Image 1: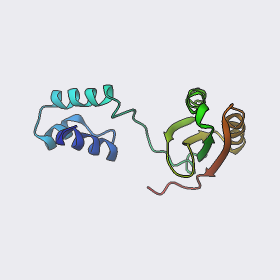
Image 2: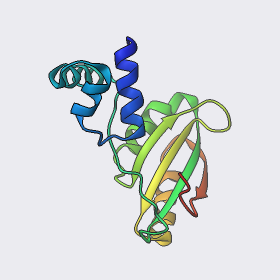
Image 3: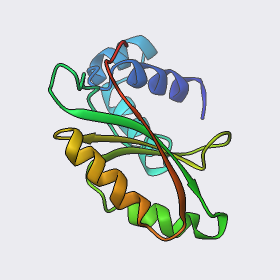
Length: 138
């Protein structure tokens, strides 16, 4: 990634809805050039998606950041099963306390609990450690 790619990523991280014309002006390139660069960043897996940051409290949704401990030999199978759960909106492989971290958004706390139980039942999952999101601050 060159300097312009880094600037594009930085700007999109701050606001994924920023107009490409504004990025182009900032970088002193054409909008077409920005579109091509973004497309390449997506193809290379640098940019893996775009999403809205939702305040679950205001939206009356139940949300959690959930850590998973997984048997190392089962990690890829567990990941494939987790990808099938629509309520998991983000998933990260991590070092530290847990193998995986999940962002889960459900209609209510009962549904969130059912999702955690479903995750517990996946072969290879050793422990599920949910932290319920109380409010979004930034």
